[in-house]
Amino acid sequence: MAKKKKKAASTARNSLRPPQGGVAVRMYRHGLGDCFLLAFTKSRSAKPCYVLIDCGVHMRQDAGSKRLGEVMEDLVKVTGGKLDVVITTHEHADHLSGFVQKGSPFADGRLKINRFWVGWTERIGDAQADRLRAKRGAARATIERAVEKLKERRRAGLAERLTGLMDFERLPPGALAAAAGKKTRAGSNEIALELLRQHARKVEYCEPGALLRLPGVGNARAYVLGPPRSEVLLRRDRPAKGPGRETYLTAGAQQRTFLLAPALSDDLPVQEVDPDLRHPFESAVRRECRFPATDPAVRWPERGPATQLTRSFCEDHYFDSDSDWRRIDTDWLDAAEQLALDLDNDTNNTSLTLAFELGDVGQGTVFLFVGDAQVGNWLSWRSQTYKAGRRTFSADDLLARTVLYKVGHHGSHNATVRRDPLHTSVDHPHGEPFGLELMSSQLIALVPVDQKAARKRMPKPWHMPHTPLYQRLLEKAAGRVLRSDGASPGSEGIQLESHSPRGSRLTRAPGLSDIEWYESSAKFANGRKCPLYYDLLFKP
Image (cartoon, rainbow, N blue to C red; front, top):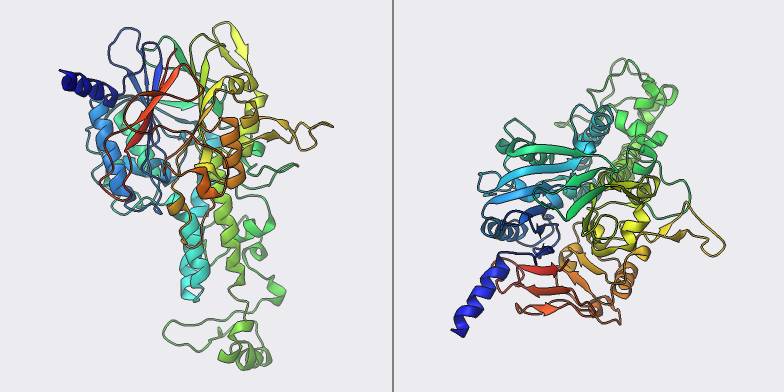
């Protein structure tokens, strides 16, 4: 009899049932990528309202696609194949790849979607969104051409670095391009977004400051914090004092001219562009020559502007094989690395950021999911108010009631804001406390990171989680920081205690009276052996 009760309790937990009037949060532990399932109590139904936030994995993760496949099979089983809301935060593969990878239940119809929430930046027909999307597309195409050129010119090191930077833009091998119902170049995260648009019964493009209702849920709601409409703030990606970096691919002359280079962007309209802006050197000092693929000897156009003396000098000295190290004709391609970095940061800053409030309007506990939002996105929250019923409140108020924080960008240095550099004082010369510093003392932090995967040389390691931030998270959350890889602070050289679920028995989270947690008894069959997920149950 005791065994039957134990089995029944285990089944109830695996189905992710929230406490009556509360919410359950499942953090999947597949590694370097985001996938979270939330279950809210419905007012008139025994079945919960299931909300999925992202479903992706990075190419650095060992057996990443197979591990994510195991996650999605659990999603089908737990939800009965029906999701009330699917949310995608931004166009990066570590948040989207699962929707279109081979065997995905989203692509083959085993997971049905009622509503699809996505940021305003993905609305086709929105003039601002279309313009930003076109810039991103042009930048991606230019970087891909630059990689090809670098390989041709035997610059393998930089080509490898660029390829690594573009991994966030690339879907894994076997992505279902046909699933989008149109011919799209494989590797675009737009495939995943298009599939979700087609499969959802209703699509909602989320504007900052908006209030979103959860289907059938009477005691919870979501507030849209970002992405901002302000392109000044969209461009701000670093936690430094000052006006911020001018990115979004339009700022400095170096980036503008790089995007216009004929060798990379032959199809750009040239009639509106100064021809000199399309070359590394202005026409007065430019000399044209070519290296045919079948002949290593340099060739000069018959009507080229170079004199015979110039040609002879270049052939005897500049193009001499013993002087290769002195040549600068590929140095202009180095600008592609900064362009790729800016493209990555710009996309992160378009993250759809949501604050879920459970309980009475303006008084309930808050669950904060920020995608990979960077500084400008966070700062934009302070310029708007949030309304529900007759109550109006600020981002600071929402942050003060935040008891669960999904840490941005795997714990990187510039995706969790702690200060507002736009507001300084004598006591706070680098900015008044904001973001993490305002969150509740009841905080639990979730970090979707795999340190081993992040620190691979592909071509260089990433420091995720960022050690100073990880230490501050541990301090702020009294050690309640849950990592996908289950690593302890000692692995980062931090002498602080951490707390996380240990075993499949339901236990109370340390220091908290109304939150219980456990980890799954099921473990991944592929890659690193660890429990499939952490579950957290929040009482109302």
